[in-house]
Amino acid sequence: MKKLIPENIPDPRKYTGFLLWQKSNAWEKHVNQKLKTFNITQSEIFQLISLSLLLSEQQEVTQVELANFTGITAMNVSKIIKTLEQKGLIKRKTGTDSRSKALEVTENGIKILIQSAEALVEANNTFFPSKDAENFYKYLNSLNLFSSTI
Image (cartoon, rainbow, N blue to C red; front, side, top):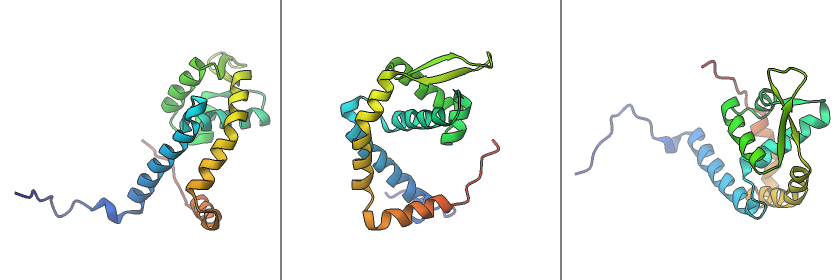
């Protein structure tokens, strides 16, 4: 016998967010496959790239600053940073504020960034059709997102 769900339960297939979530997961899987050779994941490479970018603009970067830049929770950034540190791609050191740790990219981290850059660009270009990629990027960038107050 088929079990019915209550009428007020929405069908996720009718929501843009559900479709975006599905496609985002597919994109992450695609990128992870391309980065497998470098023993780094999509989440890790974007944290490493973001850290490198921030370090090119300022003297030191904390995990909180990295979380703010990437839009990922501090807890998730902390987990990724721990993994990157275990892989020898970044180091934590005492910063100017002794209550927080400053992050730095190691020589091996820079090497991985350089080596994986082409694979990352290729993954992005093969996943997103070139004729629509710029418009899609502009649309995503134009979305008025708000921070959760929870």
